[in-house]
Structure formats: C-alpha cells, structure tokens
Amino acid sequence: MRNFMIFIAFLVTPLLANAQSIAPRDGWAVYPTSYSYNQLVKRTRSAISKAPIGIVTQASATVGAKSQGIKIPGNIVIGVYRNDYARRMLAASVAAGIEAPIRLYITENEDKTATLSYKTASAVFAPYMDEGGQELRDLANELDGVLQKIAQKAAPAQ
Image (cartoon, one colour):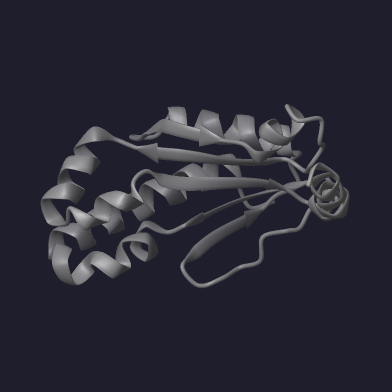
C-alpha cells in the first residue's frame, strides 16, 4: 500500500506543479494581474485592512504542500467577514450561514503572475434568496461592493 501511495504521489505532483489561470465563469469576479503571487497576497491583505471587513480564515495549499516537501504554485484562500454581516445573514437565513466567510482566492499563474478571484456574494447567497428575501439580497449586494473595492485596490486594471 505504501508503494502504491508513493507511486500516486509521483503521478500527481507534476500535475500540481503546473499553474493554471482562473478562467472567468458565471458568478465569479476574476482579476488577472501582472503582480507576483507574493505581491498580490500582500496587496490583498492590505486592501482588506482598509475595508469594512476583516480576515477571519486563511488556508494555503502551497504552505501545506511545502510542509510535506512538495512544491506547488502559489495558492491561498482568504476568508473575510464581519460580525454584523453574520448577524444580518443569519437573521435572513440560517442556512446561508454555511457560506460565511466569503472567500478570496489568490492563485499563481504559469507565467509567475497572480490572479485574484472570488465568487460574488450574490452568487454565493443565491440558493438562499427565497428564504432570505430582501434582507439577504441587500446584504449580498453590499458585500459585492465591498469585495469589488478590495479587488480594485489589490488588483487594479493595468
């Protein structure tokens, strides 16, 4: 079994080493940049620190892989939210709580540039709109504006 797992690791590792750009897709905002991965992570954290929202979670496949001796392209998910957003969301739809925090995704591209992307709050909360009504719709629209401002500061059109 151990040899089989090593074999699988050798097969998968080259696949992980190939950076892929995030393609535009429905419900996503995608901001390709000329910044390096590390630069874009710093710029995004800085933009969040100036926004009416905060970082509540972070997860990096890159850091996890590195701790196991595997190198993969830069990849981090930063979860952002705020307590009053959570209270408003839950008042509108308890089920929507599974979607918090809203996540920003920074990925390293093959050419060593990086992309900032995220699912819009409107898309994230869409399955709960019947239940959450206008209150949830208003919150999603407000969050869409906050996320867009963060992205425009972190990854301005170049």
